[in-house]
Amino acid sequence: MNKDTRIYIAGHRGMVGSAIWRTLTGKGYTNLIGKTSTELDLRSQTQVAIFFETEKPEVIIDAAARVGGILANNNYPYQFLMENMQIQNNLIDFSLKADVQKFIFLGSSCIYPKLAPQPLKEEYLLTGPLEPTNEWYALAKIAGVKSCEAIRKQFGKDYISLMPTNLYGTYDNFDLNTSHVLPAMMRKFHEAKENGNTPVELWGSGTPMREFLFVDDLADAVIFALENKFQENLYNVGTGTDLTIKELAELIQNAVGHTGEILWDSSKPDGTPRKLMDVSKMEQEGWKAKVGLKEGIQLTYQWYLKNQETFKQVKL
Ligand SMILES: NC(=O)C1=CN([C@@H]2O[C@H](COP(=O)(O)OP(=O)(O)OC[C@H]3O[C@@H](n4cnc5c(N)ncnc54)[C@H](OP(=O)(O)O)[C@@H]3O)[C@@H](O)[C@H]2O)C=CC1
Ligand SMILES: C[C@H]1O[C@H](OP(=O)(O)OP(=O)(O)OC[C@H]2O[C@@H](n3cnc4c(=O)[nH]c(N)nc43)[C@H](O)[C@@H]2O)[C@@H](O)[C@@H](O)C1=O
Image (tube, rainbow, N blue to C red; front, side):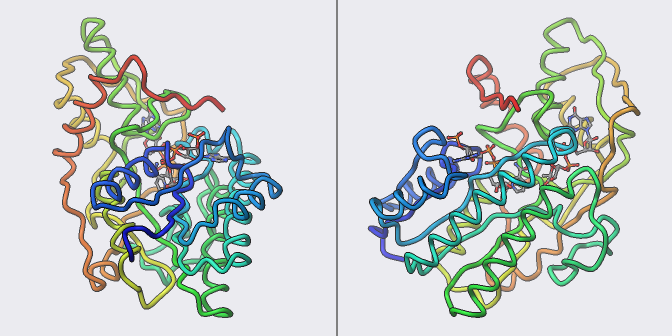
């Protein structure tokens, strides 16, 4: 990939998009394009048509989406289904029409069936029912994967889909209603410590297992996919190891230094019991995650401490 290729990073202000932007800039890429959702609403076909006409991007990295944790997914099924389909349909279809040669689509590990064998192999896609709390989002993401696969099959273009596991890191969403578990725990433990180690209330039973990838590792994987031509359409991106939500809570509680009680609110959903990625396909291509969970939590907490007054809170 030439360093002056015109690369549009959709969602460049988000946790993932900003990490991709930082990493590409650090590697000397000089022609990056970024637009906020106010400047360019990717749900609008008209706006996206004008954008392609005027900016003429050569490569697209799609990190723009309606994103949220288990409760947001469960409470706003229509937005998670429709907005994600609108965003990705516009980007993928206009990329094809504009003869964009390379497109990287980001999905999520929740596209796989709720009770699929573990670890999750790419071939398990569409082999069983989805987890109900996020089937809306998962259906949109599956349509994105299949759109890229269809273009690859029919037109021979290098359109690929990367499926990240649960992500965390700098510029994450720390809003307690819409965030994912890791930033929510960090904020809850930090604020409880500041209030004299009051009890922290967490959701569900604590028994589900999750895998966590530091966002800079995902950015590295995306750029690896940008700079190399993969043989297939769909690749999992993760660490290949997971832990229970209870174990995660203990890790974050220790990192933050909270010494109070943990209470579990069983009225909140557990979601998928386990979704550990099989990462062997990515490893065969030559990519592996580098940042361990303890290190990633430390890096994220340092960032949180410096940015707590200004961190992003997504309100749906
Ligand atoms: N976070 C996670 O744990 C995981 C995320 N992913 C995937 O990674 C990708 C990025 O997620 P993440 O960075 O966490 O999400 P964020 O919510 O941090 O960022 C999403 C970005 O999408 C942009 N966006 C949303 N709606 C629109 C719109 N209508 N028009 C234009 N831009 C829009 C936002 O732009 P603006 O800021 O300008 O409003 C925002 O910057 C998504 O595809 C997500 O599905 C996959 C697995 C796990
Ligand atoms: C990335 C992924 O993210 C979502 O799936 P999820 O992994 O279930 O999401 P989550 O991070 O919100 O929760 C993980 C686990 O943690 C428990 N939990 C405890 N206490 C809190 C808590 O305080 N907040 C949250 N959010 N969860 C908590 C929670 O009950 C659950 O058991 C989907 O949007 C899906 O579409 C998707 O792609």
